[in-house]
Image (tube, rainbow over all chains, first blue to last red):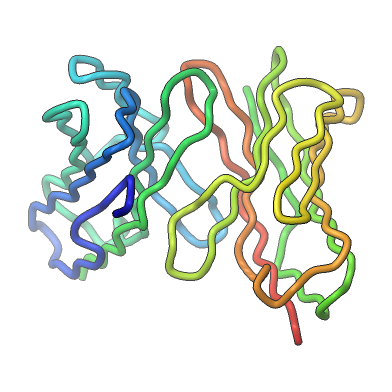
Length: 112
Length: 111
């Protein structure tokens, strides 16, 4: 089984809808991250969490919120989706420091 | 602030050709440096890393050396295969346990 899983893998929704993307990990890592990938822009950090009680904004947090329900679960929400949030979203985990991050398979989100 | 600049793609090579993908960085202190690879339809996975100056990271025939004097971490492979076709990301570990990624270089290998 994969160490970092994301659901759903693909989602098409309409402008104004609320969307939740979920991430679960079995690596036992404290640190979890949400990234957005757009063509030609690499990955940009949306939010990150060092433990259940520690949530931090990344470089592009506007329009997004997160919830760390447990050490193993970190969800990303779009309260009112808009078309320019169409992108590939990745969850990642790490054990700490500037250490290797382990990525999920991604969620492709399309907002019409 | 910290940043990573990598060679723009796409890069197209024939099988068994020599590969170089350039990466330079701007950072304070001594960050760890990484190369990640993204195969079609998958998430990123670590290819190699180096944690201090003059370290060489290597994996699957790929190599990169942490060059502090030129602030570079170029990725090389002596003989590429079709299965190496992917997007490659250079990255550096910044403060607060964050990683800063370059924009990615798409590599296509022709049989």
